[in-house]
Length: 399
Image (cartoon, rainbow, N blue to C red; front, side):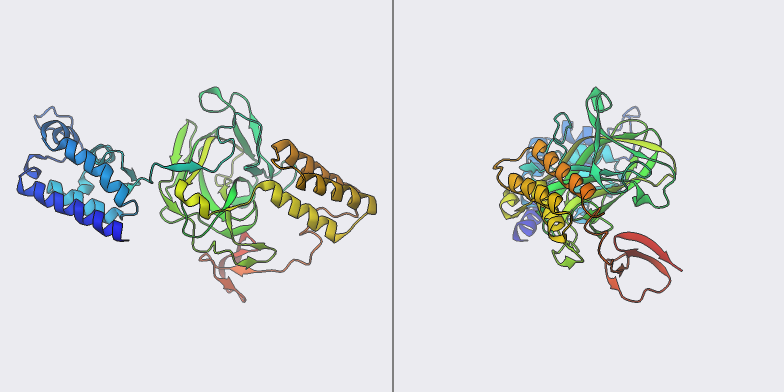
């Protein structure tokens, strides 16, 4: 907080000094302009004809490091004071160029970029390798209705590379009936700053919404941070950049049925357009500050899979099937650096157990399912009235 205030005061102080030197009088800010009428666009006039260009560009980068969490309002007000005009009158391109690499424009707002010292948590985010432990999909009308490892196809990605392909049926009732999941190898505590980027397209235009989950399909809350930029799939390649987000406060680690509300999976709700659609996603990154890594809890997928297998063993079943799964668990635990092939081997053992045992298809299927309602703000509702609620991780309408 002290760094924020100090950086903001420095920025405003230098702006005032520049105003006294009449720098602001030289600036003509226009929302649009091509220079043909003799008036220069803001960015061109400011950078080319203002002697303080080098100082201000260095200033934008320096202040960024001090004020990485400064509000958009603070920055916008400061720019307006410097140029003597409302900053909202500038185009996004003019703002981005004027502010330099330390800042970005999202949905018309000036926002600070995250510290460039970032670490990408996603394994095989460019999809060129075979490891898919971070990627799952639930495709309506295609095989299992539960999340399974996502499908990767050759030659469909950006620049002809490999990419994730998710198919919706067009017969979904809810947007979450077809989903894509990015399952991180770390649990991110509430308030953790992160950035989500990916390339994407679809064969039909479609809006996408996001949810916070623990493991895939373990719903926590219906958003992944405040002021999340809209995501709309188009038929041409586009790049999504969330800017700086914070893990929602609802991801507080408290118990929620048979899992804890730890943010570990970013979920895409894809079935919004009620059309059979092929979604293609490539070059996926979820970045956090490198300095924050030491405070994160590592949770590789194989550990979650071992816990799932052990729960199946504890639930009982055919003695031979139980023995085989116990052996697979022991093998997985004995691997110092498990690969994706090791994950697949344990998953195959789980699948085999479920086929051979006494009809157990999942841990949740054999339980008496409790019904829990939450409102759209994440508050538990014991006696829901009419309205829209989340029931056991799914949105429902109570009439």
